[in-house]
Length: 188
Image (cartoon, rainbow, N blue to C red; front, side, top):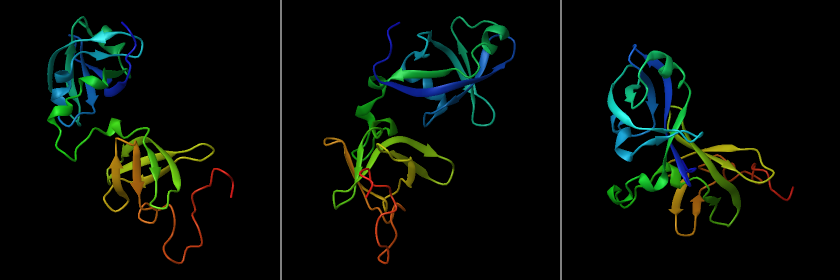
């Protein structure tokens, strides 16, 4: 199998479930039971996994039966394996006007209205209290900012830019602040 051009992480395989080769899987889709709707899943090592059956599991997991995984030993060997699809398999035509996939945000450059650069979006996290964008730039330590309407003012996919309010994002203080706390790439 050829390497995926633009892989999107869809699921991670957990423990074996039963004796017939089923595995518990943590899916990163809105509805975990629809993970098979996007086509076959691919491992980084080139293996392709065809889903034969999905069913609800416990603790936000689902149980999947893959073609060719027929016993517990084979299922146990898959534990920890990340599964991907090609970005083109995601259904863009089903999105509303202001909707997008989080994967499309990665790599977008982040600026404020004065033109100051804060790096690029390197990841999106949800630890339970709301989504966070991770920003990384050359010579900078990664920082997390809230992904909400106060901090993120505009997303421009055409120019590959994100406009933020650095105060609402927690990157600088309020009116009494004497400058940005975010490291300047030129060392100023």
